[in-house]
Image 1 (tube, rainbow, N blue to C red):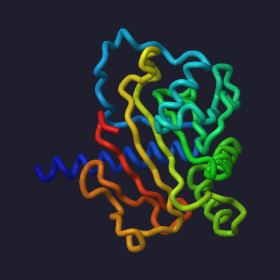
Image 2 (image 1 turned 30 degrees about the horizontal axis):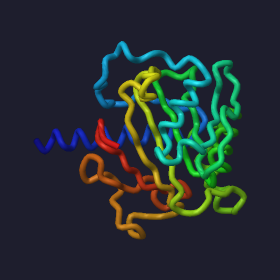
Image 3 (image 1 turned 90 degrees about the vertical axis):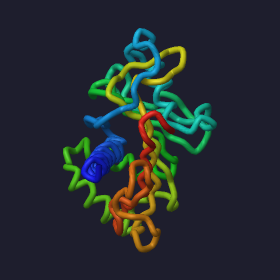
Length: 225
């Protein structure tokens, strides 16, 4: 039993690291193979491919808090492969649509104050920089106040799953689930009281402590929000 719990925790840590880091650096080009996604409760026949700009917008908005979806801005790659503004917004959220050229599904939504940080990640990735280079360069730029991450506590919401298929009637994506990130630059376990790894599935923990990218990870269990 103890070994089973340890294996579950390890899977959660690896899944959390992969999806959040990919999202942060694509918020540039997301989608890594995940462990388990929530089972589909609906008839699979109700789902269809996400194959239009309208569907990209609709499914991207699912990453935002429900009360904020109507006013959220949506950016990302359109079906023609161009990175564009898919929909203008009026509130504090920027949503990143799923990339049609990537396997699986991964949309994200973050506070607009994080946009300079996210845009810089997209820029560096487009230049061919590695994940390690992007981390180091943004670390230096945040420390020197050249790059802003907004106020501590800015959030990133991730909605991801193994299939880029959705139900047009409900808007839900097949097998998708949520993850939440709260950025706390330079926070540590000591300054927050949070552990550096989850003590049980879906418990909050702090990742990348002591760096510009320190953040609280919250991963609800499959099927929960």
